[in-house]
Length: 136
Image 1 (cartoon, rainbow, N blue to C red):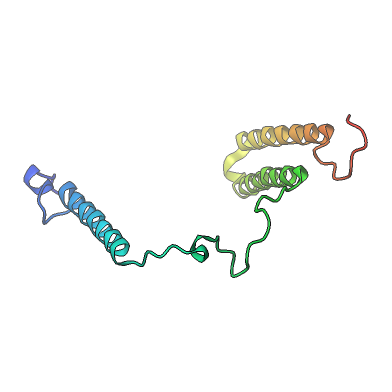
Image 2 (tube, rainbow, N blue to C red):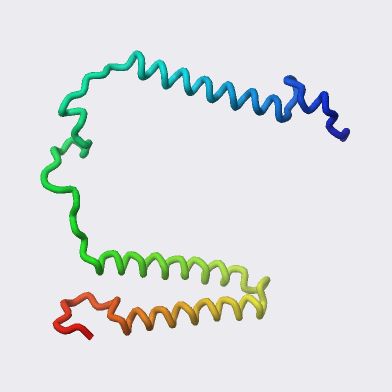
């Protein structure tokens, strides 16, 4: 394999920075032309129907701001945290033979941190679904 020479690097006929730059320029110009033509030739009638949000053919009623209860977000966050934890543990279990004792120590530390956080969430009442009569 021969090293690239300066005339070959900036040649429009060989792959290199010049041909990549020309390609990117042509793509951006083509996108600009398409956007200009679609805005120039497109219909510009602003009606109430076009300003209404699309809701799969259903007319929107009421406010779009539906207040979800806070436990919903907490449980969703806990699920994501412990779901990712399961992915790490499964991948560690697959590579158990290759990782050895160092891998075992690292996954043990990871699981201990997660168990401590789970007990913390539990003590703070993050896993309580019922109605709380008193603040702890």
